[in-house]
Length: 478
Image 1 (cartoon, rainbow, N blue to C red):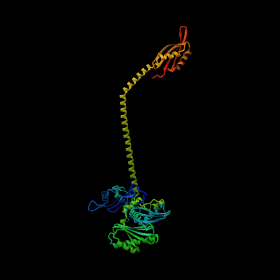
Image 2 (image 1 turned 30 degrees about the vertical axis):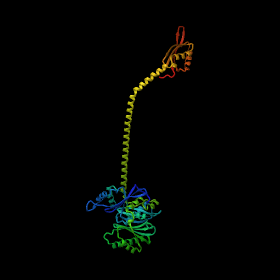
Image 3 (image 1 turned 135 degrees about the vertical axis):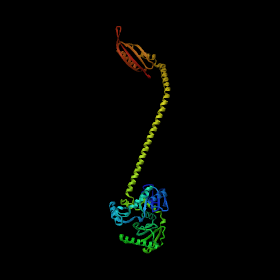
Image 4 (image 1 turned 90 degrees about the vertical axis):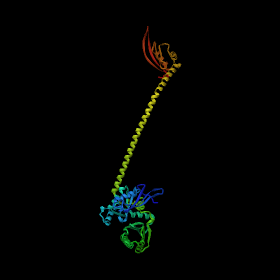
């Protein structure tokens, strides 16, 4: 299994598209790392015998026949749909690289710059130089993909090159020569591609047209001519290096004549390989989303460049759409929490109100028994007070009489059981009266002595001092 570097979601789907043919593979997290979750090949069928005559019918056929094609996808473009070139640049500065790449595209593209979508992938890098694969595609092709998949809700996360998907599969299979110059030929009925490999890295790529309308001999001759032109171009641009070998990878083609002609042209034995031993190309495209093969070279120099032809406007729209969805979700969550809070407050208020009503009803029901108990307690307290001889009127009078000075006379003794005693008396002088109060203050029966007014009064030929005192009994309960 291969190592995970980056993946935006829990799964990613690699997609290969032809006119009426779709192949896709979905990778996702499993018990043993990244695993294949699903893989399918579908031949689209039209609503009538005429087949699929317009993009709308193709989209409808995909929606009808491929309901499980969902989530983010990376689409690979066939070699014949794009212009590709491997170049060495004398800089690693992103701005300078962009300017140089635009100059290169002007040289090999027959279309105006404003009509081309351009991207690149860094294959290797040093501190001052880098080798990049440049890909250019007419914008109409990119927009047609968007128009095809946008109505069915498929998010195009990356538009890649099929050749890079093949490279991913070949590299994982250990089929890329690590030393010297080698040629790889990938052939299918729909066409193919030449890949020149130098020391384990792509050095040049060249698309191959399908065999349609040609005999095997004619097609073999055409391939031999393409191979010769490719070798001459490499010798002129990169220096003369002997070709160490040629591997021909094919599927569903009789390559007997082709291999014989290429061996004759090259002078080496051509090793014939079957593409059927490799996983589907769509899996290679998905693996590149998980682990781009050349990303380590770029990151080592601080360069983030992986082949991706998705227009910036799509990413802006996707970002805006995701933000809009998140905003709606956040508002929905906030409203939901607010409603839950309001409902909770209302329910809590109603519950507290019910509890209060129940308590008030219980209080009303218990009020009369409580009043009866309190009345009975007061009566018992009164009985206890009157039965308490330690605080009786006689005991209090005895205590007062004990401390009453000889020259002080009591004229009135009013006893309120359990509460107070009102004393009135007279003396010939004021000092005995105060001595009498001080003595009462020391008595254990009395809590406090409140001295009233002292006034002189005539008694026949004598002048006496009259006084009033209020005595508070101890343990007096109101």
